[in-house]
Every structure is written in C-alpha cells, then in structure tokens.
Image 1 (cartoon, rainbow, N blue to C red):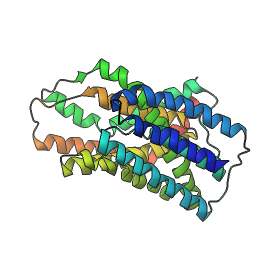
Image 2 (cartoon, helix red, strand yellow):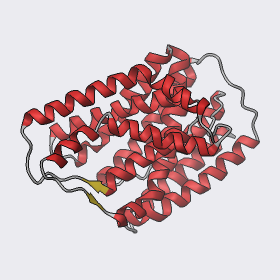
Image 3 (cartoon, one colour):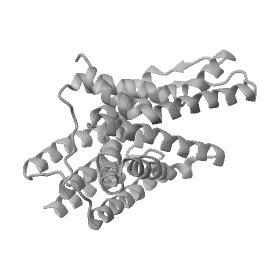
Length: 303
C-alpha cells in the first residue's frame, strides 16, 4: 500500500507539474495548479491515514533514517529541475505527500493543530514577527533612515498567497514534522534541530545556485535559510504542532515577495555593521529562549 501511494504521489505531485510546465506558464501552474494539487494531497493523505493505525515511535531505526534521506534526495532533484528549467520550485505538494507517507510508514504521529486553531494562527504570526525582528528588520531600519521607500505590491501579495501556503505546508511537514522529528528522536534536541532545520534546510536552498548571479548573495541566501530554519525548528519543538510554523513560513515568503525596500541612498558600512550586530544579539537571545517562549504562548493564549 505504501509503495503504491508513494509512486502515485511522485507521478501526480511531481511529474505532473513538471510535464505541464512544458506547455503552460510555470507562473500559472504555481498560482492555480499547485494549490489545487495541495488540496487533493490533503484529502489523499487524510484518506490514507484513516486506513492505518499510527503509533508514536520511541527510537529511530537505520532503515527509517535512510528512507527519509532518500526522499530528501528525490525532492531535491525535483526542486533543482524546476528551478533550473522554470525558475519556480513547484515540488512543494510532493514534499508534503512524501513527508506524510514517510510519517505514516515510520510511525510518526504528525500533529497539525492544537486545541485552538485560532491560537495556532496567532502564534504563527508572532513567530513570523520574531523571525523578522531578528534578521531583516534591523537592515530595513537602516535603509529607511537613509532614504529608502518601502514598496508593497498588492497584486503580487494576492497572487502568491495560495502558493506560499503550499510552500509552508510542504516544507514544514517534511523538514519539521518528519526530518527534525526523526533526528531529534535519534540524536537529541540540539543536534536534531541543527541537522534537520539548519544543515538540511540550508542544503535544500542550494538548488537556487543555478539562478544566482552573485556567489556572495548565494552564500548569504543559504545561510539565512539555515538561520530561519533553526527558529522554525525551535518553534515547532516548543509548540508541538505544525500549523504555527506553516503560517510563519508562508507569511515570511509572502512578505518577502510582495514587500521590498530598495536603497535610494547607500548607508555607510558602519550602520549596516551595527544592524548586523543588533540582529545577531536578538537572534542569539531567541535561540536561548525560543522554545520556552513559544511554549508559553501555547499555554497562556486567551483563544
């Protein structure tokens, strides 16, 4: 049964978008086809879970670790193809489906919601704000002080929402719900979060090298992905459900696509160094307290 659903998922959520991209605009596919496939995949996985009894595992066998690493390789190959040929990563639904199937096959009990979905959503936005404050916000402040004007594109904002929600769903289920869970059970919290949410999440973004015109920008991009992945990993470890990190991840991508702050006057380097120091201090503080902070949000919310 697992093998059949595994192959079916690769064909429907992987090869179908790849095939359609040869004839249709990849943008059209990302806006309409991928979100539709995401809805199909959700019902597909819910049906599959109803037919199986999943019990939480205490340890991780070598075969499960090899399986999830093999799936990571398959997903990375699809991602690289989509980016290289079409400049849009359309493998997100496939990541969700294969991650879900792996969780079922390996005995991982994925928890998507807490007792309050409203609380989960609010917590997701709070996590996003903390991610923003500890990374981009100090640099944006410097740019604004020296004359930059923020640009918000409402059209892009509305268009990318369905796709970015799919991005959050696919990547968070695989990297936090499956990969991190397996690594944490095998190696402990610190090593597990580092391996899944920093190392492998950074490697995941290396596929964008085929579209980068600057090695410096590429290195910063990959490192930022890893740093943000750690915050998402700690948030998931503290909150114990996926919806908040899905919301935080999707909101980050939506804002980064629709909001830009171009530099009209280049600020002196020392101000960007100050922004970097402030960002690093906030980030390090969050690393030490993020799990406890998110856990407190899950308990003290009034929703």
